Length: 236
Ligand code: ADP
Image (cartoon, rainbow, N blue to C red; front, side, top):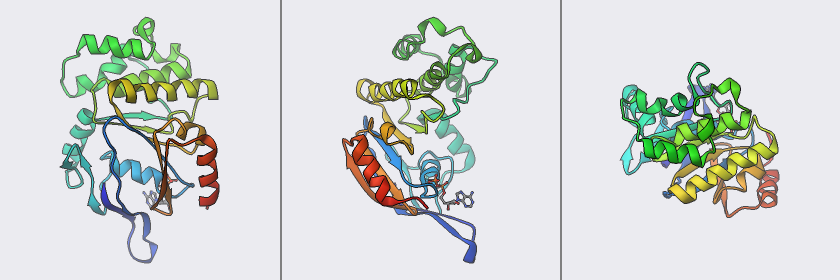
């Protein structure tokens, strides 16, 4: 993204949620985005993933500018080119695991590549769970379904929004390791918003936001380095 700004509201009440943020994400890399509450993390995710349009600046996905697309085009783009993993799993309770995973394909009228589906089920350890409903699974298993659903379309980018927020630390670690493996083994690009330094330490790089601005980055971060940077950014 190039010089992306997002302003909510107008005049004296205007909130500058993002200020001229420029950053790029290489294919097959895992980036964590951190910052104090209110620093612009959600706004960043929404603009980068085509869930919202920036006020100014450009967002490019695989070389194409998506910042000016209309709502229909953005919906199609999100369905076909972007995968999402949310804190709350967001699975459909009436569908089986396999139906949940393949839902993005059905929504964009694409055929399911069975070999790819099998690979993803194996990778996420869900082979024996494919006919179960989400309510029959643990939280960690449900998040693995969400990850499989995000990977099934072979998206350009997977966005993860606090993917471990609803999980205990052991289960959370399992999800982070799976995310990391999908980056390495599938060359999947992953961008994860988190407030947890442990989660961020699984990424190749951490970006820090402060007051809507990019406030530095860390390469191959350790938990302690991330925590120390966060302490200096302060909480508002
Ligand atoms: P974070 O995710 O880091 O907590 P956000 O991106 O949610 O930060 O918010 C950044 C700033 O933009 C905050 O000051 C927040 O109050 C403001 N903001 C976010 N969304 C809206 C909105 N829809 N309308 C007005 N202000 C908003």
